[in-house]
Amino acid sequence: MKTIRFYILAATLTMLVALSGPTIASPEHPELAEVMDVYVPIYFRNTLTDDPFRIAANAPEPAARSALEAMNAALEEWGSGPADGWKYLMNGAVFAATGIGATDTFVMFYNPWVDAALVTEWRDQPEGLDLIDLELMPGDVLRGTEIHPIPAWQRAGSHPSIAMIDTLADTVDGFEDRFNEPSFAANWREELGLDNRADVTELVLPLIALRVYEAQLRLLAITHSVVGEDPLLQPMREAVVNLVVTAAKVGFAPLLQQADRTPKAMAEVLAAIPPASMQGLTPVAYLGDDDEIMIYFASPLTADFALAAVFAYEGNTMSLRVLDVILYAAAVEAAQAG
Picture 1 (tube, one colour):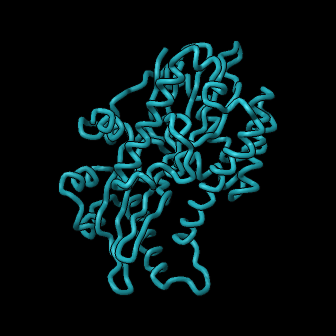
Picture 2 (picture 1 turned 90 degrees about the vertical axis):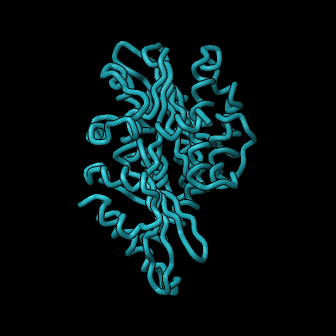
């Protein structure tokens, strides 16, 4: 039984080639056959963000259909709606898989920003992989800790980027350790305490939907203006647009001239990243105080990295001060090594 972490499909192979090298390469490289084994779940992920109601209606197994309908209903009632909710959850998610080549394959899509994991179970049938069951759960469930209303990286008390990577590493470890055990995988709902559909619908799904809604509300300040808002929000939007457009068009060189607090080693890594790798960047998380704000960016085209940017207020303007790229696979490997 094999395990796959953070694999990237055709849409992002360009980035893998461009970023190859000992400093920032992914520590694991899938074979073509292994990539094809997870193609169907990744296609499901992409389709889920486009039409979650159709995905639920067409689910071949009753358990999967019931679970998807409950998730959509929770996002509708407590969050920003299934369409926007799934886009946020899945576009910012990394994924890991266990059981590649076995009868049952489990694929986890994990969004670190709201600390939520969608665990999906797939069965190898003569006509291809079928979705058997799935559940949306807080990362706490996979880490074996008590469920908390606040995402783990926001309550850790350490630097947000370090906390996010540590939480991601612990979640991936929790998923792999459990689902690589055949006896656990055969009864995973019971083992995780998610076998009561009514309890999951009433207690678990609203928590995740509210996390998504709160995150999206915070991000709205970056993309939409309102009457009577803080006058510094407009300079922030302009700074964010400049970063996204510049990174995707010409790369990080001109941005690094502004981000004068970026460590030299990180600046060298960023300067070597081709603009094509930064297509689709969008804000996924936002923290701030009276002096500075930190915004995290990710791209729905890849599950391999996040970009962190620190902006500082200077009178009525906002200036870029620090840039940091977080390559998930390498960062998680470092976190696991201590």
